[in-house]
Image (cartoon, rainbow, N blue to C red; front, side, top):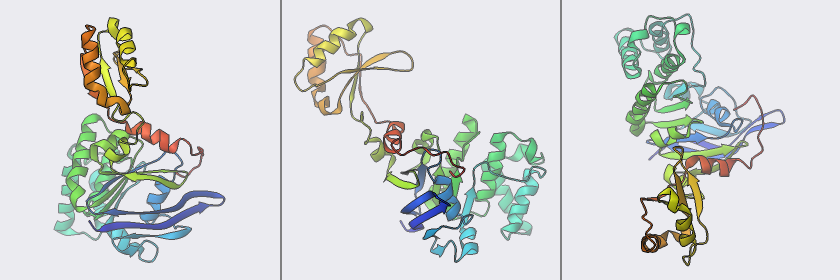
Length: 321
């Protein structure tokens, strides 16, 4: 995979505030990168620099081999950018707005019509094409913004909360579209919605306080969770306490926690280091007439990992995301 985005010791200061602090990373063709961080982490600032909307204080950013500051026009030709809020011209219709964007991108005549029609079809905008954008729902406004970002079929796609305001059906449409485009592009998605990562991303970067703190696949990130590979067991409620006592009596099992699901079901959690005792645990409970009704190998939660990695960084309320 060839690098499409390269950041080298990228730093951005706003007076005394360091919004992006010495960040280096690459994003290759075929990667869908989930760019995660708490509010004020530096995500949006980093993406604005890559898209050419902000100048870095130091360090460099290149897109498809073009330096963002030295060759801004070449970079913008290769980037599709969906900023937070997807600002558009409210008095225009999606049809007139996308036609305007197509002309800015250098398309005219039949090619312009083809580009607009393709973007409209991909985002399902047919029924609102002639309606003023200011009258559209938040979800439709977001989809119009997405349509302008992909209209020129860019090699690099940068999106800030692409499914913000979308209903479940609209989210599915957008996620399917991202997956369809992924093989031929480098895609960066900044999001607070961790389910977005599981849905479309094949790589995760976590940032806080302007610094890059973690980088890996979603699976490798989940494996860092404290409860990853723990063993969950369910028995009938009236057998819960004797089952717990029995499990704790087994050599090599140091602790047994109780976990309550959202539906109120209570399970017992055996730490990951004791999961090799699963067969012994089930047999010991069975000998006491306690049936294990459910046995689950727990998978780490990305939100737990996110908290563990980023929570120690002091929260800063700033106008820069």
